Length: 562
Figure 1: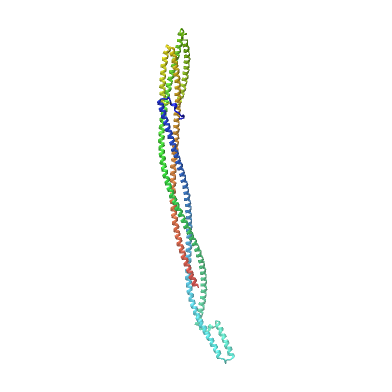
Figure 2: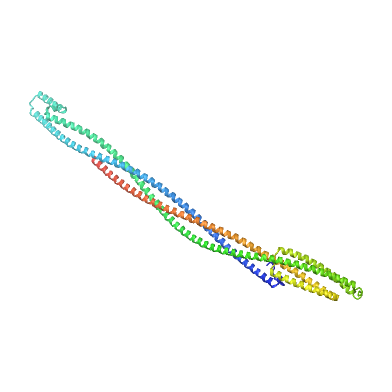
């Protein structure tokens, strides 16, 4: 209430006091309900803010996971490109190995040819040694002949100068004959033919030896080139090995990142499941609060309907009260007519009782005073009628309680009946004695004053009650409108939360699908990398064995050439 004390309730009927207490208790209950709803709405707003913050955090986490997933996909694409490049390099290495195999076959063929040439050379050497032996034999025979000549010279000391000159000339001729090709003429034709064949074979062997030497030089140059190429291949194989090691390290790093991402995704799944549980619990709580708010809204709507019915009943009672006030106005008009009749009777009594003027001068003065008072009463009655009109106009705008209005109207009827009886008795007393008329007029004045005061109090009380009821109705209407708005907000927030939950669930499903796809791609890349590494290792081992074989063959060729 807007006032501190309850003094204004003094003098009200019990029904009005009961109605006022009911309205006060209802108002207190509505205030408590409003405070409770306000607290619930504040808690709901706090929960919604927390939920929005959590959803924002989840969105940021999802965006971060999306970026990490994109980075991982880019790294996987880089690995795929590197694997493709490595596959191309391995293909090129295989082609090089095939070319080296063909060159190795060519070298082996050349080695076979060199072996054949070596065998032929050995055969020619053996033939040359035979010829050398025959030549040594011939030289020994020549030396024997020369010794014989010397002995013949020493034995024939007695010979003359002619013989000496002849011997010298003969020796010179022999030397010239042996130095030139004329010595062959002394040989038998078979020996000469065989000697010519041996010389031809010797020339042929020399030419073949020079040819084989050229072939061996070219083969040595090819072996040097092949050795250089094998060294380059070794360097390339070492670089490929290093690339494979780096690729294995990157694969291990990717495996660590994948495991870390898997762990983070499991954590995110746990967080999402926890948040979905919280969201479901908050959803159930919101549904409960919404159902409770709907029931409260229905209750308030029922209360509003009941208040509207009470307002209608109060309006009906107001109409009845206006009718009663109109009847009371008519009664007052009849009282005014009665007062006028009494005045006329007094004037006639004054005219008839001129003989009693002396005795009744004082009483006439009192009668004049009474007439003046009656005029004042008439004026007050007119003022009261005007006040009643004003009260009726104010009652048309405001609501009154039915029980208080009925009690007041009954009291007013009783008072009017009492006034009628008093006026009737006053007329009788006026007819009998003026003293009783003065007393009746005094009592009438006092009662009219009390009636005016009671009417004023009643009008004030009715205005206060109407203002209070209007405040209650407006406050209830405002509370109902605010509750409707808050319910609409809660429904809107609930729909937004459900939509956000659906979007979050879809995004998590997409992330899980992307995660599965990334895991499958990672496993596929790991398998491809393992297969490529195995192939590269096998090719490197085969290449190393081929290089060792080539080196061994080169060493054997060099040893054979030496």
